[in-house]
Image (cartoon, rainbow, N blue to C red; front, side, top):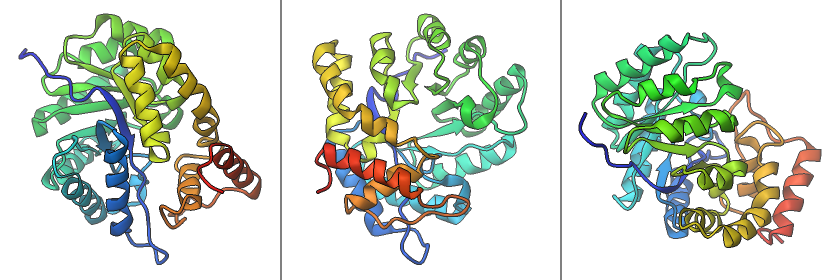
Length: 298
């Protein structure tokens, strides 16, 4: 197999999708967010994933969001668009859609709800990679999919041409270490959980696909770069400062808290699509308290 080049090293932001008050895609604020992220120093942008509420976007909206992000990014960082499904056929269709909109690569979540076998995961990703012929990042997130891609399966998938790496959000350190220890050259491993990014980077991971970077791209990407340079004492200071924000982002289902926070920071309108709704008053108070302690709002 031809030697692969690592897709990115550092922080990739799992971008939220802002909506206008009448529920349409908020193109103006997408562009603002893209510029804020790149100015903050992130190394990649990942629109239309879970954090981007992709399951409530129709195909034309997905294509438009990706096209806006690609246009505004203007080649400054790679754009890796979410294009997953629990139907392999639909996953391929969605992948072609976002590639047509200009994405550099795709992020494809493990099939959810129908709970395939380990060989089913393998055949799913092999079919996608073969059909589209560009870099594919697999996404293992058992908390949302009700199934886990085991280390042995990930390493088997890693040998498929065009498989660029994995966003690992299982929280299973033993599993991630097995992947890191045995992965082929050029196969990226990115944390899928902000709060455990530092220890995973210490173990040799390549970066993070981050939610908290939506709010604090400069500080968080700085922490990641410090880790990649093995300057862990300085990285720990930033990690400990931002940890309450990382945690409060998940007091309700992602992306409810991060969108509430960004609205409080004046960056977007606080709009969701059902079945997601605004956070409870108790959780909103927690979110605002954390933002105030970090001096992100008055």
